[in-house]
Picture 1 (tube, rainbow, N blue to C red):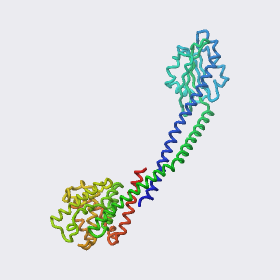
Picture 2 (picture 1 turned 135 degrees about the horizontal axis):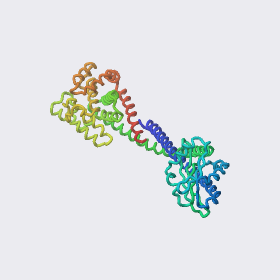
Picture 3 (picture 1 turned 120 degrees about the vertical axis):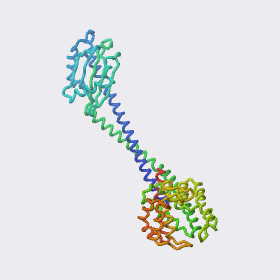
Length: 447
């Protein structure tokens, strides 16, 4: 009953899960690729910037030997290399350079004013913690400091490196802002896109390779579970039908009250879990009658007080039976409470109002409706209008008024569709509803 539909649902669920997992994996690895590429760029450009500063250092070694560093003393040397495109290197160039004495005296400074927003760039880079406050504290000749930042979407490096004399003693500090060239940026982005593309292809290839195996295993599990569900549902229907036939020579009552219950529950907007509970409870509501002796259960006339007391124990028998199967325990909401009345005068516990489970309040209405409108060995069917009048007499006493009001709106249609049918239509509708509600639950569990 549910196998093929369940397999299709599981297939869709697995595809969705695999698709979501693929997207997440791609996003994670794409992000890692981005940061790794940026780290590699930073490292490579930092080395280029360091080489440039050291070359400048070597070019002014003679001037650093005097030991007395005066403002402006290295400005001419810094200006002289402007012809090298502002210390320009493959991959980028310095847009700002300054040389500082150990006491912070500015010895030389070069700013590329042709560069857009150079002041904002310098201010932003100068605020980076890795460089700020530490560039004048460099104690060793090889102590190179670098920090990476994005300014308005473009990558920059802030660098700081000691300048040394001929004896490799630190005598000054060079600070600078190194701009990554547009060509390098475009290459980086192209490399990132290409790498992300490779990642996506690898992930997709891996998924496509293992998906058939995963789906085959899940499908097999799904078919086994679906088969078990079919068996449970068939056993439940067979048990409910057997009890109904023992009571009235037909199982049509079980199918009709189940369909009536579902239609009323849909009218009231119950969720799918409650619908499954209602199906189980409706089919098994009288399962406890298996424990009632024949002279009471099959008595054609009215029961006396003692016999009625025995008959009422079918609720306890039903609770005991459904308690033994975990899958049926939620059916106890109907099995144990469908004879309770809204005013508390019902049995077995005299529960009243909303303390009675909603599914039981629903079933109570349709159970009486079907009993009144059906032909039984001891009675003829009661006409629709008289049946509705009888139900209305029980408003607020036997029945929940809100539930009864909802039923009034659909009762005529149910009467016309099912009361005079042979039971086959109710069975068909119930089978379709069972397939819908229990297959969705199966797919949800497996996905």
